[in-house]
Image (cartoon, rainbow, N blue to C red; front, side, top):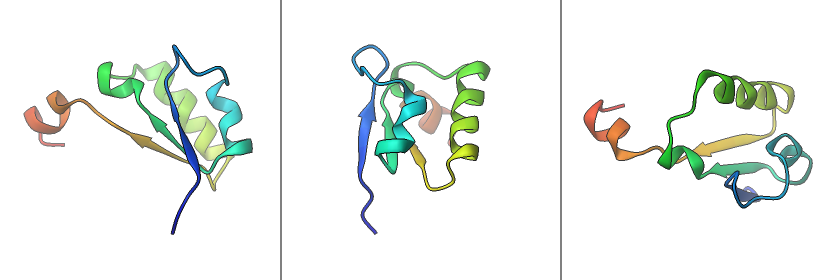
Length: 71
């Protein structure tokens, strides 16, 4: 299956992440590679996905998480 999406990076993306499901099926969250999300950010993303069941996030996490903690 091919999904149409876009990269989301808060400092350079003009559209608010909550509007992405209207235009895209998936969003690549580049900012999580550089910074681990806090509880407020994570809750916001969860609400977006819960509200838009056909929408997905792809998270690129830093190797500190994937290699050090083997998650």
